[in-house]
Length: 313
Image (cartoon, rainbow, N blue to C red; front, side):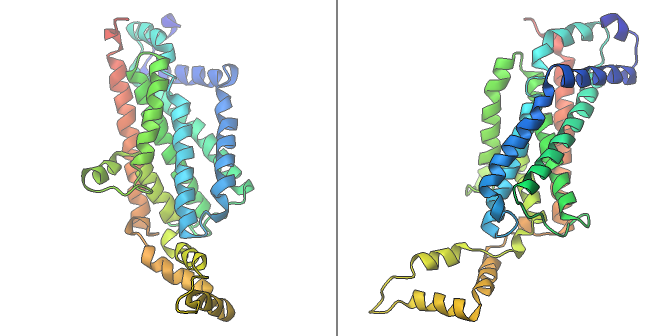
């Protein structure tokens, strides 16, 4: 292998390694990430899928869960790929391997893998009964916008894991780091935890923040009804006040005249978020942030591998 790549250029080396990765996909069972993606997406959408893109609460919870699925898939794709063959890469680098060719081949291969996982995730969501947005924000189709977002989240997570795999020296270390990366992404997504000050600024460094904002915008969060206020009123409907039950009377009146849905939409207008507005500017801004992260993480992996000869293990 070393002799074959000694005098080959960067493009030729990229092709050689891409072929190697594709063979590994088939013969070393790397294909298992696809059914795993289907299982994870199936479990998540089974739990939260019925209200995804239907109500504000369901969209926020379901979008967060979907982003988690994408991040997990991306992390699992490449967290061990470099460190598990670090000694081989080191020898081949000394024999003439260009790290830009190696990382470039990884980027192409991982992109193909993420494309397949995106298709699997979308099909699984559809089978689980998720109602995709009818209209897109960037494209005419909501499912196309959602697919692009899922791909970018998965691929950005993949490149982050590739960079970590290039920095650490053992698969044990890589797998130890991965849960902390995942927790960091979840905590600083900006979706469920109230963050202020410096903590809020950290969200700009997370894949989850841009992914969640994008999915909610594409899902038209701000245009959906909010059910929390209605559920709260319904929960306290039998409270007695001076011998009467005013909440129960209000609820019955709205159910009689059919104004319940109007009430849900009205309450939703007070729970809108600027970051979730279904505008072209919002979605493209989120996509650009994810693309920048992909480039930065890929460059980080390349730079880290350029110093692999200093590894004195």
